Length: 482
Image 1: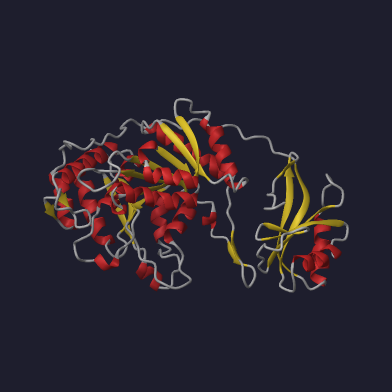
Image 2: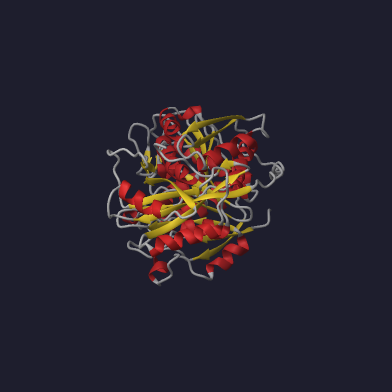
């Protein structure tokens, strides 16, 4: 018998304890060799005044086992409480979120009976850095951060996943027709790394039309990789159109640690009633078993689950009198799966996992040489409501000193010089200063002196962004209307 692998387990809140117990019962009956260590997370921990929702000592177990099977939790209403999922992903470096979305027609209702899509979502960057500020009375901001290393890591993971699981195509979704620098970098990295996998088909979609195609014709996709926000939204959409968000599990993978969970919440209204469907968490646990090298047990449990669904043994959320034969509770559903261990589905496609040891990922490409970076200007963001664009232009131009006020924008649209009177303006303005002579650089000292003049004039500057070129190419966006 295989040596038991230590894992960290949290029962969570709401329906969490019920679905976790059913999940543990099923996978252990299916041959999972695990040694659970239990920790407390969630609502009761939040109520102790621990804003992250996890006891400090629980991190010792997570750092030791590096495998976390987590039930859903309830985050209390009100401010000051951090997302435990985001915290765990950040602390443990869980950069890849993997969500298989499969339909089980005709036993579970769906408009897409042939759907079998895996969403691979970048898990740490994008707007999920949580870097937000209120800058003026009217305007707030959230910073979108996309890095080359972060993009390379998630894109390579998607291609390696496709190889490992005999997938034929990897698709990238971005919005780089608008966000040419951030999403443009993600798309560029996808194209570069894709060249290393000639045996895999690859394609790119702009995320809006790609999302429409995913919702309408999911069979056109296989593995889809995308930045954090798009992946968060569309993985739920994909799970729902496959049949139910309640059936989907999720893996959060890092270089040294991993977390596995259902993608749904704690559903406190259903807690303690033996009603909840444990399938989402169970599928998270199957991803865990594959991760720890117990794919044979995952395959055995998965096929027993498929046979149970075929036999019409369904929980209330997917029960349909036209196809279901028996409505069962959480515990009884788990028992039905256990009773079918060793059996294979008759109509649904049998689960087949790669039980061979995982091959080493292809060696990452050598880093490109550093590009020559030069500062050629500065964007100064100001909070100002004492007049229109021309008034602000006259004031800020007078403060330019040895620099040139190139233009002023309002929420990304050029309003000075030669702006349009129809453009709506808030109290949030960006004044772009450059060197007086084209092609010249701007020093930090010039920027400091500029800010000193602006401050002395009583203008409330709220942030600055240096304008840099890299090997002579602009590393900053143009304005709308420029």
